[in-house]
Length: 142
Image (cartoon, rainbow, N blue to C red; front, side, top):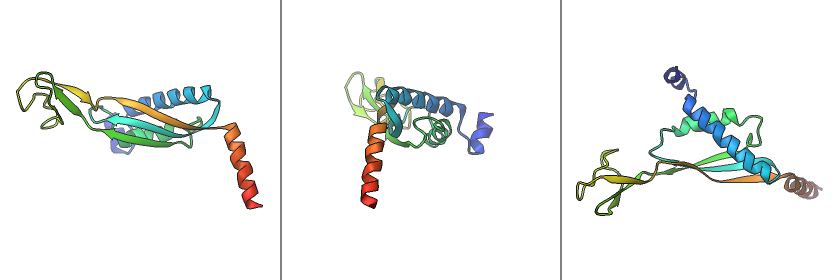
């Protein structure tokens, strides 16, 4: 079913649940700061995750409707996968996609970056800021 859904341009179930989790977390943080809206969400998306960027963006548009993040811009920064040899300490991108054997010494490598999805930061707007902005705009138009 999800394969068929993704062929029709719908996000997979995985990306929908990830987007729901993101919106839930950022709303919680925004409400704690008395925000009336979230204007920007910056994510770090690792190369070694199973998340499809385009599907996540589409899912985000769906799940943020009716939330503080409804009009938020979703900014996603891609984080490449970097591996490090546990013996000779060489840092590199994996050879041939997922080969986790060191090309220098032949020992196993560990993933250093590229396997996480993280909310880097959010930008919010409070009711006070919104009122100040509206007041400023009305003065400019007068």
